[in-house]
Image (cartoon, rainbow, N blue to C red; front, side, top):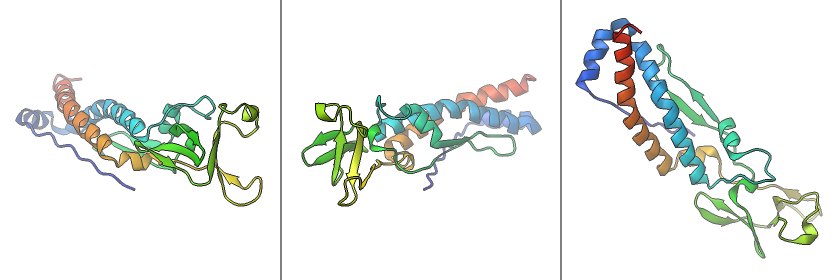
Length: 195
């Protein structure tokens, strides 16, 4: 899945600065893209986390922030490649990250903003004392067959699905357009001053 978002900045002052910078202009542009890209990326990933409804769970294997960092890839801009890019990959996270709840009809998780029932599933939480010390507790399980251990762990939506949602895209566009103009002016001004 590929999501392309482009942000255009038009300013006559910047055009004059680019002409004055000459051959050093690509270096300044790359520096400005990176300065604007990192905080934009941080704000974007916060919205992705909110869109997915992820919460850290004491029995999950890693904190949510680490999981999102491992499933995204950033490429910074260089003078030869004037593009700052962020890509998400991988399948959905285990259901334990999506605020699972147990009900008589099965477990439900937060699926992109709404509760979704997982068929033939159950959530072993500390709510039921007999299950408290079970070796398979604190996880969502789905039955796959008729045997006692015919189980698997269902997964929720992945990072790429959340990145394609409208709220994160709006955040990326608004943050990038707000940060890129001043970053360009600052980087090109530094080049013109001899830095």
